Image (cartoon, rainbow, N blue to C red; front, top):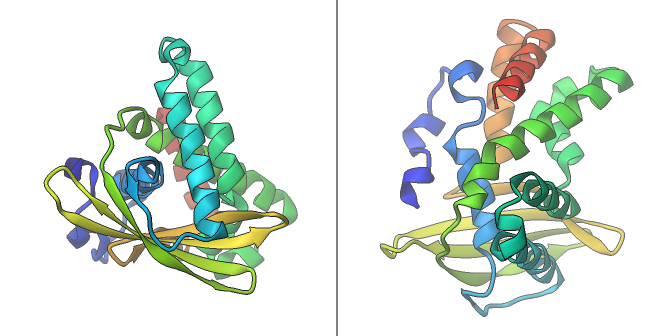
Length: 219
């Protein structure tokens, strides 16, 4: 499982190239962390946000273990995407990833960017999810402040290496949705902020869009 994960030295790099590192194994690491939160977990201080993460991952595990869907990849991936869409706030992730550049986009540009951003994330990690093998997870606890919450867990690999994970969530109606995930202190959203900002400032927003489209087309 550790082979899926990106080294922190890459995260700290100051030269961020979308062609090579737009969606690195760090993303796979982030999404796999969600998949790991299921029946093998050790009970912790669970509340409503944690329960909602469990609800989503229970659905995903059921889909992955369905013998009928095993031979129907297209339908299985469709169901996995639908399940993840219930828990991830892709629009909020896209907005935060573009940071100040988001406000400069027209409504039409925002409508174009969000599904492209979402599609790229989904396509990148789908094969990793499907190869999931399972590890032990401890729920450390959660902190809730108004409509926002943090859910902390620790993942133990088969070599008993500890990986701290923090899910940042906000309440949307009756549901808690994820808008960021941090692995070993590295935020997915901040990682994208750095990359996107670098590309837009050195070139243009259109250049970023073109690179995203190119990556989607290759996957």
